[in-house]
Length: 124
Image (tube, rainbow, N blue to C red; front, side):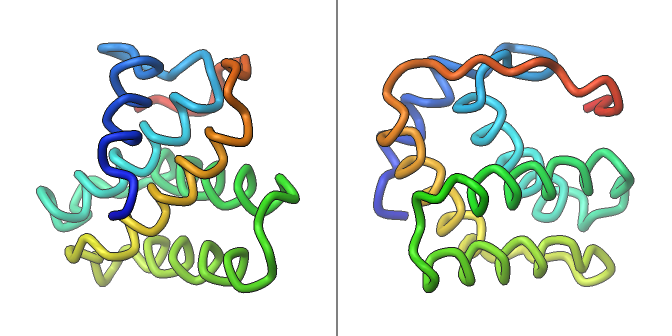
């Protein structure tokens, strides 16, 4: 991970102790870490629609931002597709770290908090 300290700062600034973040910055970093935790700690045993929602939120927010070139966009799509293949949990850090770096890049392009409404479908 290239931007570990920045990712930690995003977490500390924008992620609440419980529930969804009320900013895009917070929800992006929360989503990637929820997915990492489920795969690495639980081998995706609790995988469900909530994890799909988190993965899709990551993919859609990053790829639809217009911030990333074709190479980075394809990398984001591949990494999220890999995580969505939940029957074979991704336990290495590489795709999560790459996504985290892209989240930090997105956050740098949006230095002010970007508000978001909670997703009523999301329960984790």
